[in-house]
Image 1 (cartoon, helix red, strand yellow):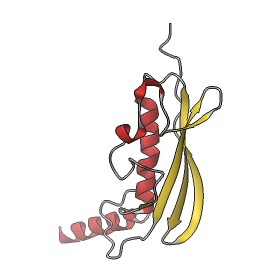
Image 2: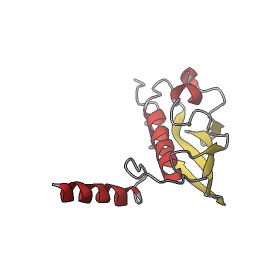
Image 3: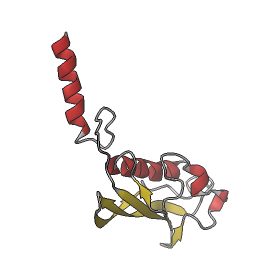
Image 4: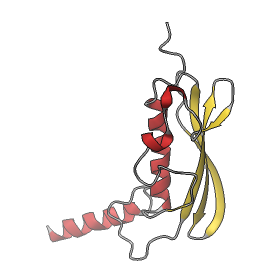
Length: 140
């Protein structure tokens, strides 16, 4: 029984090194990684509108996404739970907001241009996009 517990703990620890969310992967010395993101709404006519500007339906990013340090993504943040973990939550937030803003009849998708410093190595830039929305699907 003891051997099974030790093996299970070892498997969870090894898994933590390849997973975005390393729930069981304790590290004595945390990362010093940082990130920031410029998030825009892409409209049907191709316009790129920052999420801090007025939004159809009265939505605001900082009211929709209030957890995991994602409320103000344009500020530079410390990735306190690990960079991969933080960016995984950001990708999920993009999809969640795209799927949960039904009164927005303009936005086709959300896009985040992310700049990150992986343990002071960088800056690196990557782009994440939400799933496409079906704009106007609720119209008769």
